[in-house]
Image (cartoon, rainbow, N blue to C red):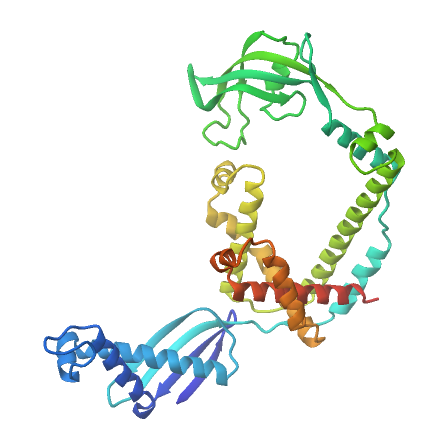
Length: 430
């Protein structure tokens, strides 16, 4: 087997392979057997018909094509292994020559994992660590008091009152939203509850309700914002018809020992404050650590150079899009709504993300390289423990078999643990 490997831009290689007949004859024999099994020839069981009859039935070209596919896959894998080529993505194959009793020649162009140049990164990482050491996580009394008020407000009771609605009140309303006298889709609601002043409706809606009393009806006109999530309503005027059914005043509990005890496990207010202080301190430490790690990653990216293939950028943009869709779902909107409001196509959005995707790929390659250079790989036991930690959220082995790709989970667990080891190592550089 003759092999010629030519490097191309964007971390691609062109692999040209030539096989003599003796090297691929077995693939031709296999092809005859496989094709024979798929055709019906009277008087013969499947796969048992003579070759000449099979050729007459399907044509010699079909057998040659099948043989070429066998030979290509088999020899290509051997070429990759013997030349330590880490191919990624979908290769493009071109058969140059395919003759019975003759040579079989083909060329494959494929992307490969890029070679990363990472030099002078220690200086940037040490600088990031030195900057991080200047900031200490602290929690002052104002932070604690603010959190206490938030907790107290979340436990407020609502009491019906016979007065005009004020900011901060809870209200119950029936309403209709009309355009040209016709209710819009999902524009009718009864028994809708809300708190005035939270800004959950379009601008002007809550302001129009302030001062209304229970049983009062009111109609008013508003215009939807230009960047409203429903594109067909954005910038359009509408008529709102509202009936106020109830006004409820919030009774916020006093922040004292009794309030602390009502939360379940605190003997007095100071114990609650201590708990809040510890929790907030951990949150601030975590935020500072994430910031520190972000700066470390940025230092690695700045020190990295690689000719990244398009397939890696495309895969990373796909991951970013999936992450973005999840974020949108958490605020009850969709990617289609976002695209409509931003007046972008999916392709334009992904193109906007290309520089960020490039940096994310570089950072992943840098962490992987440092892990290899410093031998920071997790042990098999550590990877197994991480996999078990993830799998414990599944109710049964049947659910695991149905929903979990164990090979992919293993790769994810190993990568996550490896990156954690690398980042801890980097954080320790002074």
